[in-house]
Image (cartoon, rainbow, N blue to C red; front, side):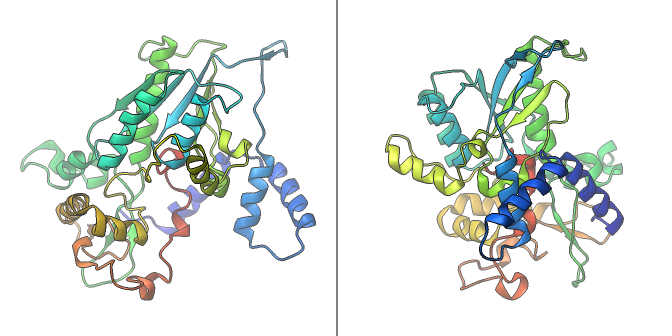
Length: 357
């Protein structure tokens, strides 16, 4: 169901607790930034600059206090601009360390250009294996969840109880406030398959604990303009690292790197075809330039409409709570009257840095 105020407050608190930089360090860096600024700066930009300043290369120590190296370094590859840039910079010898493995988690519903770029990377990357993992096909799972077979056990469950759902928009027919389903898709289709593969690479059997002293460093392709998306790993044997932020590289810097090196093709933005976090410019581009993907997303949008059991609430991929195929994104500022902008800042924290990079 849509998120109520109490649940939203609790989740926001959990987000604060999981942020990679501790509050004291953030406050220290904020003060330093403010001292150096001659003009006013909005809070979001200030926090982002402070988070970048606070991000340093991690150090690891054994029980005796001696410096040590991690057991393994993994690059979580989203196959978008930033993570691909990081992977190729490692290949070119431009990172201080090299990953032992790169892992791409396939949701089964990525755009064609993402799969083509992954195939390119598999040929271009020679410093380590590039592995693809998957949990299933998120599109097929969503359709089955929204349209269970009559008389099946799945029919008795709510939509959210049947599938690790994306953050679909929910609204009652005739208008009213638009809510949002709890997002579980990144965790189940990205995080879990990658962690399962890491355990396998460590030689850990299913349902066995990771051995004492084993430590995995996971590289995530978040850039400086998205620093507030940094999250701590939730497992004691896994630590997150953000090399692009350590190198003070923004998404624009990554794009410029591709232009300067003139050696590798520039990737598109990686995300599921029908991701509800798409902003209007992405829908516009899909509608105009990728008609097959557009029709695929519209078809899925139509099929999930009545996925919530025993309720009048309808589900949508777009935050206007309108059928996707009814929206003309080619018109000038198609949603300006509804949302005031085409980029959704409220979604800047999505997907834990494993989607869209």
